[in-house]
Image 1 (cartoon, helix red, strand yellow):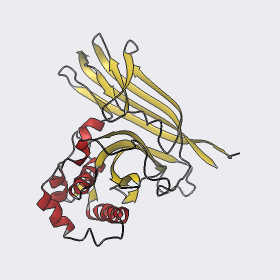
Image 2 (cartoon, rainbow, N blue to C red):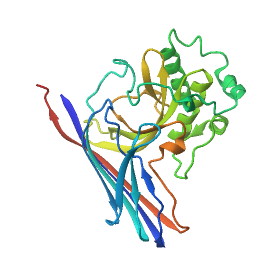
Image 3 (cartoon, rainbow, N blue to C red):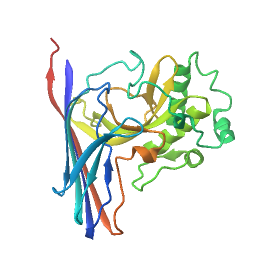
Length: 282
């Protein structure tokens, strides 16, 4: 049985006066080789006179660049897609295949004080499992248990030291902390932004879905590939995690980035997902 889901994500910016927008980079398209296949995809931006150009960035993400020649009073982005979230075993066929090799040296740059990270680990990592993957799963679960999840609407990502000292943070904060630990331990690691689609809480029938922008860490496990680690749930990522962008730092994976004139802006977002239908494999 294939589990097909339709997703709609609408982002709206309203400005208090007409402004000039610089090129706006939109990172809201899953990779073509994602484990959860994307069957249909459409991106629309407004106002309608804007132009869109697609390209691959330095991390092999498929990104759109929206360009507006005239002043605008609003900026709208709408994504519609159909994705197959049929369950799969993330431990088979290696890890998440966003990119096949960890050759980018930026994925190994240490991002925090090694002594601080070592103090949290307290020498337990090497004895936490028989394989690298088992030990990373242990670390991911420990972070999920140690950190209190906090929704943060303000922009930016906390430094790993701040998240560790507060023992709280958003998904992007804890993912960035996991990456700091992985790099300290000698692994290539990168930041992932994407969608998390899951059944609505208290819906025992699992027919009502929620969809949110989410962030997690991805770590290269030698001879196995990339594996995603969700520090919010403590789980290895699977079919409910739809990756949109990978990068060496959180800033490079932001869903939307670009310059604009100084102004007051109002931001609104709508995300919804629903089951399309269920198909039987033939």
